[in-house]
Length: 385
Image 1 (cartoon, rainbow, N blue to C red):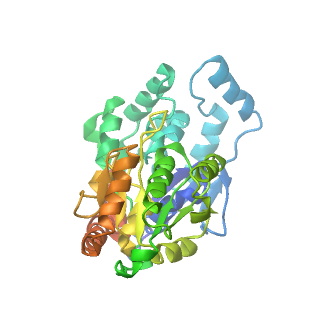
Image 2 (cartoon, rainbow, N blue to C red):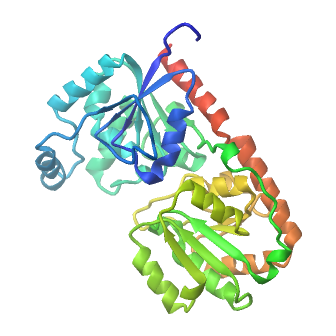
Image 3 (spheres, rainbow, N blue to C red):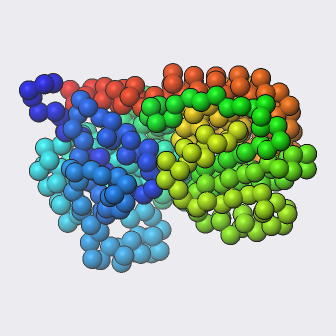
């Protein structure tokens, strides 16, 4: 498209951008055949996520009262007002946007009046947690169904999320799987020395500290592992509401001197930890509210770097890991099976090397950021015809 203006895609993110949304930033800045602009309610972490073409449309002064009325009085999800709708349409027209891509599902419900009123097509993408937000409430489920009817296309990160969206009443023909993209050049494969690790195994899990990440299972399985390998260490990288509970559990298990909680760290720091580690843990499980994983980004990054991954048969994880081939999968919430799998695997360095290499190959073949960005561009351009 040299010499002509690139078609404009408006990307709506309520907050641009929370630290855990790095994958969204990567997806947007990797676009080359379209010109992305961002529309957001507020801007955060601008130093970590620099982006020039962004329009801030803040919440109106009476947003709190409007939200209270919808949620507490009407018991249904709030939606933008007529005045907000006018402002958003003006922004899209000013940018000459030809397509609107809304991140995430529950945000698109709030924007339903815009989806219906704007003359150009809208896309919504679901990434995992947003599939089941408030779906136990009939009014929320119905509003989501209406939103799914109104958009032209629904993007999901995994086949498991596709099935969940179909269960919400979406026409299967309008759903497309758009994989998470990993910048492979940032996670070059490095062979680990699993023989030398025999006395000081180093484990790592990187995630938000929330229910669906299975962190209590990680700690209990690690406690079992320590009985045979007392010099092992576990690093848990991330922050979240379960921090105090997990720290207390580590103390109760008497393993707190072998577990490091780093809090939120930079990508560079996390890479250093991964390259210094031998095994990556991610025993995801369905949360109390039905929250499930798509395919965890940190898991894919670890696989790309050459870390063998021990995870669970949950959500989209089996779409990236074949048990015993490109990683190890155990049932959800099964502390004993995870501990047993770890104890068996560390006695076979050759097995760990094989699954590490196979895991890296899977990420290179299916989750390369450049390839996924080109595919997303094809989707965008096809929608604009």
